[in-house]
Length: 90
Image (cartoon, rainbow, N blue to C red):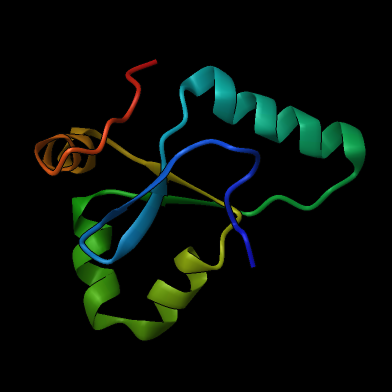
C-alpha cells in the first residue's frame, strides 16, 4: 500500500518512514480528505516514539499503517538533515 499522499517525499529515519510535508501541505491533505469523505489516519513521531516503536511491535505497526506520518519536533528533523533528507520548516 502506498501510504504517501500525492507525490510528496517520504524519508526513512531509524526504521520509520516520515512524510516531508510543510504545515500547509499537511493541512491540505486533511481538508482534501474531509471534502472527499475519505478516511485519513495521521501518525506523529518524535524521538521518544521512534525509540518506543523499536521495542513495541504493535505501536510500530499502528504508526506505520498511517497514511500520513509527520515529524513531531526537531528531535526527528535534525538527524534526518544529517542523513541527507530534507524536511520543510513550514
